Length: 292
Image (cartoon, rainbow, N blue to C red; front, side):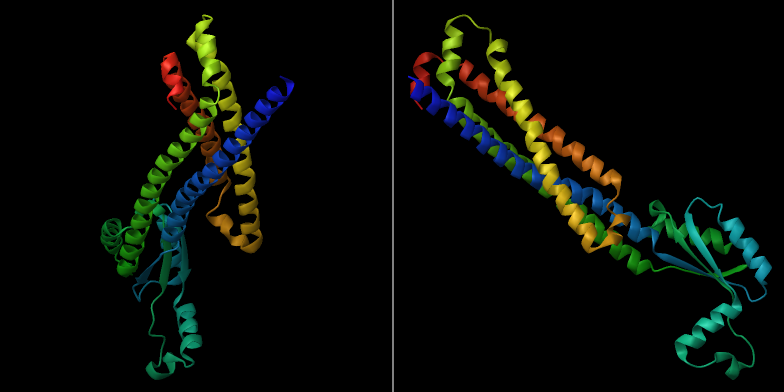
C-alpha cells in the first residue's frame, strides 16, 4: 500500500514538473512575441524621430534672424529637435566633403543658411509632412523645405507589414499555446478522474472539488511565469552586453509590460484550462470514466 502511494505521488510530481516546464517554454515564446511587439513600436518611433527634414533659408536671412527663427520653430508641436547651420558652416561642410572650395569659383559664398529638424513620431508620415511643408513655406524667410518622402513611405510600409506579421504570429502562438497547455492539464486531471468522481459520490460540491485544481493551476502559472521571465531577462542582459545602444528601443516600460503580460497570461491560461478540464470530468457519469 505504501509503495503504491509513493508511486502515485512520484507520478503526480513528474506530471507537475512536466506541466511546469512545458508551460514555461510556451510563456517564453509568448514573452518573445510581446517583447518584439513593444520593441518594434519603440523602434518605429526611433526611426521616425531620426528622419531629418531640411529647410533652406533665403539668402537675405542673417545669422541672428536665423537663430530667432529657430526659437520660434521650437514651439511647434511637430518638431522634436532642430539645428541651425549658418552660411559659413554649410560652406565649410561642403568644402570638406568635396575637397575644394566652391566659393573660389563663384567669388562669394553661394549657399544659404539651413535648419535641420527631426519630427515627433506621430507626424513622421507623408500626409503630415505635406501640410507642415506648406505651413513653413508661408514664412518668407524659408525658401525651400526638403524631406525624404520615398524613405518615409518605405519605412512606414515596412513597419506596418512587420506589425501585421507580429499580430498574426501572436494570435497563432496564442492558439497553439492554449491547445498545448490545455492538453497537458487535461492529462494531469485525467489521472485523478476517479478521485473527482469519489468526491462527487460523498456529496462534495463542484466548487469544493474544483478549488485544489484551481489553486495548483494558479501556483503553476506563477512559477512558470517566473521561470520564463528569468530566461527572458538573461537574454536581455546578454543583448545589452553585446549592444549597449539597444536601450533606445528596449526601455524599462517594454520590460515591465512584457513581465506583466507573461505572468498574467501564465496564471490566466493555466487557470482557465484547469477549470475547463475539471468541469469536463465533473459532468461525466461513472461509466464514461472507463471509456478512456
